[in-house]
Length: 248
Image 1 (cartoon, one colour):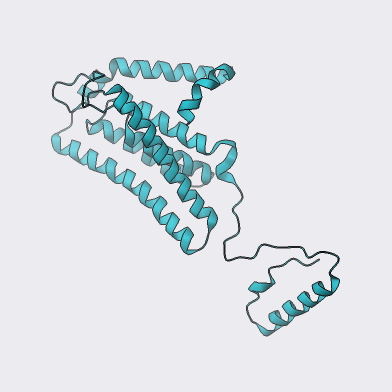
Image 2: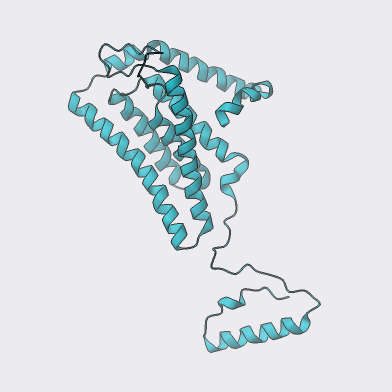
């Protein structure tokens, strides 16, 4: 959605964003021009390429598994905030993968590991551009970074996503420009989902907690009875979970 809506934002570009956009376009053009030569210089042994491919898959699987475990923990603890964070991370990964899938079949670029490949576009049966691993990794990392700012999670997320992107090039499954564009798609997807600080909302109460409620001033007798009841429970040492009311 962020990619679809982005052309409409061109009329409202600030000078800073225009400069960033031109820099990104220049970097993309340079990579598209020279990444065939760059990739051909990175020609590790076949076993190393396999190891890089496996490692990149493991890193993406770890991100997906982390969100899944988080969702299960949120369900078990009835923690709506943790559960919503996990769902948002799934959503970011799914949206970025869908965007990449459309572009893959539109551009149909040859992969580096294809025989005699020069990275040509619009070749039947090829799906190199852009990188799905890079997009999914950076979508997850950007969302997590917005959900948990100031913690170690942004470092873990972006570190893992960056490593995944490099490994895709070392595995000879993508050209550097494939990875660069995939990273951009993932980042923009995460930023779109977390726009206006949506990922930093105040955590709601757990489902098994009472929401504080003020009793109306017109019910002093009820307030007094309620306070006396809670004081009696507190004195007996029993659970006071039913006294989650704020009585004024």
